[in-house]
Image 1 (cartoon, rainbow, N blue to C red):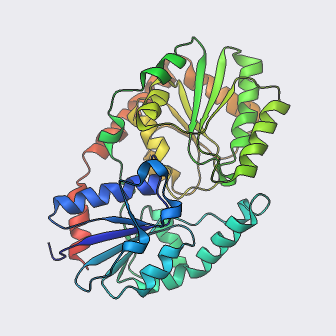
Image 2: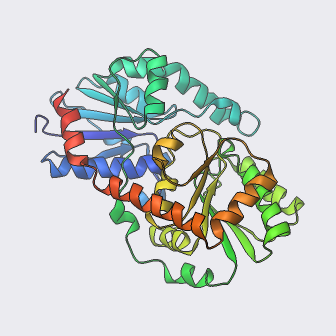
Length: 355
């Protein structure tokens, strides 16, 4: 190992968040390679139950012989720390959501996203190496002028999802209804309203014994969250559940209790939840955008555009027992086997050796 220490910076940290999970996976891999490794995050952007996992950004002290990795997705105080640090540096690009999605809901976040887009080339230019967690994101970096972008596909930690399910959540799901699950930030680019509208068709026209479970915090965009709740009420959908928080064991219970995972998101740099759902043997229905096809890797069912009634029909086909469902699940199991066989330690070592 050529670096004594390999530290990481992130704009925020929360349990279940894709970037947070990757930061932990990289930290553990670096420690396995013999390096000292910590994750530094602004204290005010660290979830309370995660404060023992990371260290405050204010405690970070650059050391010339060490390596610094920055997970870049939004404007943050961590950006200035990264650019100022006099040491070897890597920027990992996780995609910056277009500000247009947030403009009607949160002008402050929209401004942060616009600034992050403007600063992307400067952040890449300040790094000794630039990595992306998908080929889609690598193409965005190249378009911004970054050279020699390497792809390190978003890491998936199987042990984090191979744990006993929360018995309380499992008991709450022990009903005969068909359960359609969404997991992710409840943010405008996810277009959850389209999923709710499609579910309304499924619930009212195809299967009354059904429910839509939305697992995601309202903190990403409170006004959007409020709009989703009002929309569900306007459609008279009592069968839509908003789960603001799920522990790791609770999240496992939701995946294990689901009949289908569905997402109508219109902008994704990768979309880790589709991988998590496949790992838990849940058929996946997702929009064919951004890095989603890379995450699916030929498995699940992708759609480009579909009317609500068409999505409801797809939901019905994937939920119903039969050849299509079995074929989809078999393809997902094969995708997960390929993923679990991935030589993550070697990939990371090769990228570090190239510095």
